[in-house]
Length: 213
Image (cartoon, rainbow, N blue to C red; front, top):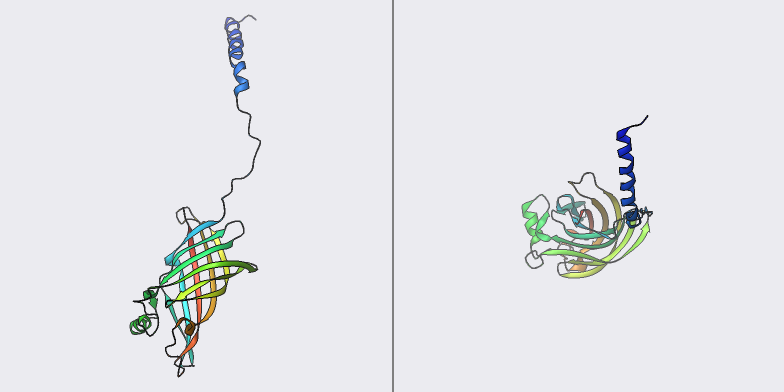
């Protein structure tokens, strides 16, 4: 059946098609690559001082182990987010943040008998080499400076985890290490003679970092 509207619509479609056809060759070809977007490694993290701690243990009077901690840990570390391997550590711990739960003892530890906080404000560690030593474990070598004395140490560092629970909390990662030093190597020999305090100090450092933007 003849339709006046159809007779007008068909020529209009033909004209529109003729106008668009020359532009078809200018349209970009559809993308065929589907490679995933990846984050370049290494990724840097700033130490979260609230959730990072440094603990120490020393033998007291040959009878017990005495514990203390440092409430402030600062610095950065970086890791390969593809393998969770640490790349670099650069840490600083203010000596004045020492905390034993006893003010008099804290003040003694800050004195020249021990850390001498007025002259040597911070302990530092800067890594110089990292090697895989096991599943999630790494031998980290670097310069440890305490009481103004720098010694090279190697400690086993364990990967704890990496996650982003929420965008507000940010992407986080953490490592932990435990090692022992001889404090007399760093010029702190108070109490060693006579056995009041042992020379060996066990150190435990737990780090949590927030990915730097």
